[in-house]
Amino acid sequence: MARYDGSVSELVKPVGTRAIARDAVRARISEVAVDLFDTHGFDEVTVEQIAAAVGVSTRSVHRYFPAKEDTVVADPAGLGERVRDAFAARPEDEPVWDGLLASYEALLAAPGRDEQRGKKAMRVLGSTPALRARNLEKHLLWARLLTPLVAARLGGRDAPLRAEAIVQSSLACFDIALTAWAESDDETGADLLRRTFAALRPAA
Amino acid sequence: MARYDGSVSELVKPVGTRAIARDAVRARISEVAVDLFDTHGFDEVTVEQIAAAVGVSTRSVHRYFPAKEDTVVADPAGLGERVRDAFAARPEDEPVWDGLLASYEALLAAPGRDEQRGKKAMRVLGSTPALRARNLEKHLLWARLLTPLVAARLGGRDAPLRAEAIVQSSLACFDIALTAWAESDDETGADLLRRTFAALRPAA
DNA sequence: CCATAAGTGGCAGAGACTGACAGATTGGGC
DNA sequence: GCCCAATCTGTCAGTCTCTGCCACTTATGG
Image (tube, rainbow over all chains, first blue to last red; front, side, top):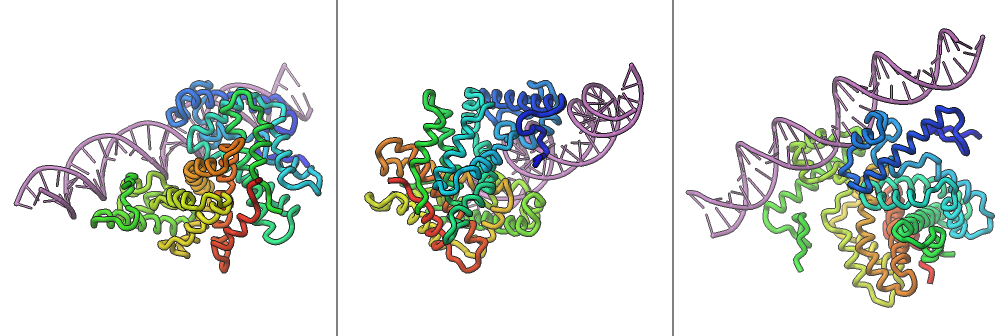
């Protein structure tokens, strides 16, 4: 099933030189924006300045990213779907909490992730209310993908309600772990994730 | 300790006719705005229209509410502080999860809360990404107030990390319960809150 | 009764974002 | 190699949110 979500990047490699260029420009804008935000602060940097630094027009920046915040939060690779698929692949009889932890862990181990860049992005992301909010919005999107799967595995009374509580809590843990990881020097993301998840447990 | 946070409303009653008028205007703007958003959608309503409907200038609307979203999400009564104080008053040896649940319950039972208005506000709040985001932002503010208290009661390894996970998860449950309450007709908020909280439990 | 503080409206302007249009570039079929 | 079409880009005009500033009115307290 070839999912085509408007973004150009395919599962593994973008096909065609055009798609490659597009993804490259996108990545470049994001990189420049994060750098500018990191040094001057999100509110002090205008889209015009980002555009100038990259060497494109303001209009083009808005073509790649519908909102200024998306230059930091954007999710071109469809990570949400990736987590959902990872969770769907977990064994049926595994406790959901463990399954969720494993699914997020798989995300951390993903290849294309540059450590330094990721940490800087997370730091910038935590520094401004607008960005934090946008990030949480993204997580709500993920939650909508995960909740049905979790509800199906739970069964019993109030399954949808309980599933939503568990999924959103797990996403909160994911976020907390990543934030802690961005601040710390020598901790690994996977370890922090495990320790954060250890704080809670779905009631039987 | 007379906390004076820039808002005029005091703990119980605003003193002085001026403060009364101010709070009344504020409430009126919020009411009108929520109604307009409910019927036409958040994005389709301009601040100018809200101002016209209330009978004030656009400038004044922005004086009462720094952002358009705040007409729905605003927290004039300092609910965050109220939750914090409620939790601080819980017995030391009570499990934190129960203490948090009780603190939110106290909020639901608060007097000035109009059922119908509250439900409509929650429904509008869930209907637009911008509003959801602002609401989550408010919860992060609450989290910052609660986390230190919870961390102090937890103790042990990774106390701050675990406290944050627990607090944010509890806030997620609070939000989920309120959302479910807004959609439902005959369920009580307190009952939904208890059932949502029952889905999770901090690991010993 | 008056000086001061508070509230309000109008105005100008910055910044984010959108739609429309025109020109440039590139891809694939021939 | 060539051409048509799809794609990409920049420019322009315009809307909307939000802010600072100033003038004006009104209520409050001495």
